[in-house]
Image (cartoon, rainbow, N blue to C red; front, side, top):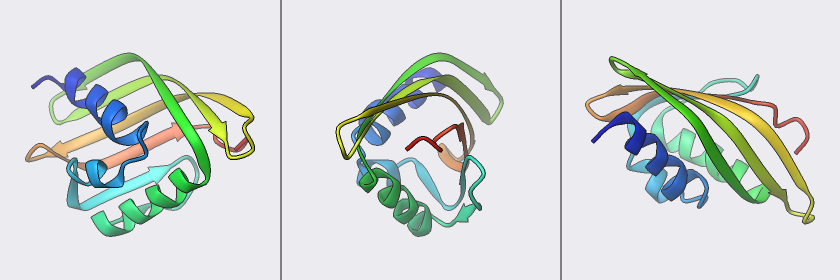
Length: 118
């Protein structure tokens, strides 16, 4: 499986569906997660809880991936994301995500996007 398929599957089948059970299948037990300027979250259960909290704060999101770049155990993707707030209004942002893998699981999951408008 290529990095492009992995990343597209991650976004299509886990993140954009706000599915923490599917997200869990990608994460190592000691995953390190950080979104924007928030403090890092370490450990699968804590990362899943943080993602669930974020997922619950929005109605939906859709990522458009423009580029995927892989080098060794690290994959970077970038693009745009459209959010639908709970009040029905929208917000769009550009994003970049860096993923580092060990044994086909994500150990570093670093997301950079301006979500301050949410």
